Image (tube, rainbow, N blue to C red):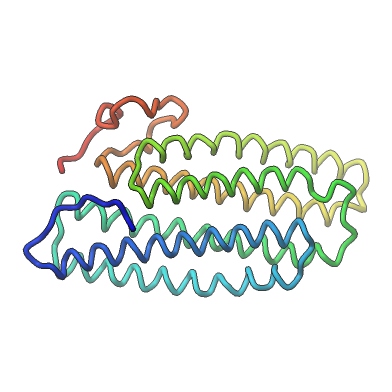
Length: 246
């Protein structure tokens, strides 16, 4: 159950519509989390069939985004929401875009994982990709939890994980380039590793965007122009930047 605290409206149907789009957005997030978990497992375990299911599941993600945007457009046209209700609809539209792009990145990982299963696996079994993937999984899980609870402080904490994701991504890129220079026969394999790492990094970026949407939704504050590392979750959100009237 979502712990939202939106005001009641004269039209009970309006309340139902708002709750429905929020529930659908969270369901979309849950599907993305499952897709990501499967993509990581397919990659690390060399599971071709699981990798193919990840690719196919992205069709459903795309369908949900289309439906969600249509429902939000209908609410905007018929209800003309204002204040916190308008923030909710706008945040969901933005969130659905980031979730859809996260699904695209999961699909890329699934396709590459399927190809890597035909190659000899390295001795470390993609250890660095495992660590990066697990950190991204944790970040996405914390982000979606903050979204479900509409917890702006938790969203800021989750967004801070993006710094670690960036560091690990850059380390994998450097190591892959070094190994390719040492042994040109590994170029194809490490190019795939670099593409997977890039996909994980992009998922982290979109997860951070989702955290920013949560803060905007809950507090009406746009923190996109601020360094997330400099924001103290203990400080009242309204002191972080320009606050829109609610």
